[in-house]
Length: 167
Image (cartoon, rainbow, N blue to C red; front, side):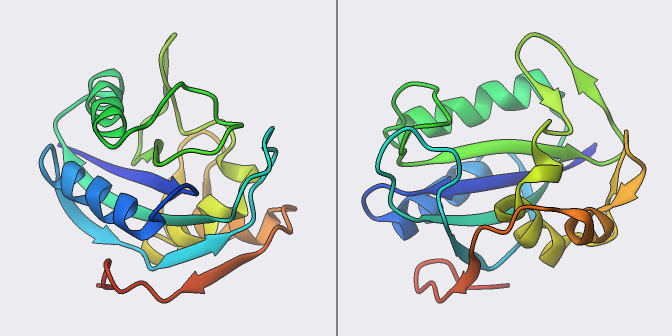
């Protein structure tokens, strides 16, 4: 059994509903252990005139290895209207695998831990809320340490979500 952390984000349409629907889809393929609050964040490195994102982190347990989990998550994204694969365009939903506890993995489809994890405050803040002592298996630093060392200064603020109650 793997313990995995995911990052969810949406900046199109009913952002809260997309997060809630993604969370429900994830519950259909894995056991959800924990979830962070919802955060409103500034768009980072976008090619279009992007609206703010809603982001959150989710901890799951799964028997799926990274490539198989990625396939399952992409199905959820497509079901929720995700078009294309550019991470630099606005999107209804984005579900990223950010960390498999104790595992580093890379192939042509997926890299774990997520290669941009250490540079993205919008991922680290919610992840810190649910797993501050989780360790990046390559850098051997905790999420709390990575957040302290992060140079990203984009706005990340808690968002009062009515559709996604905080645990």
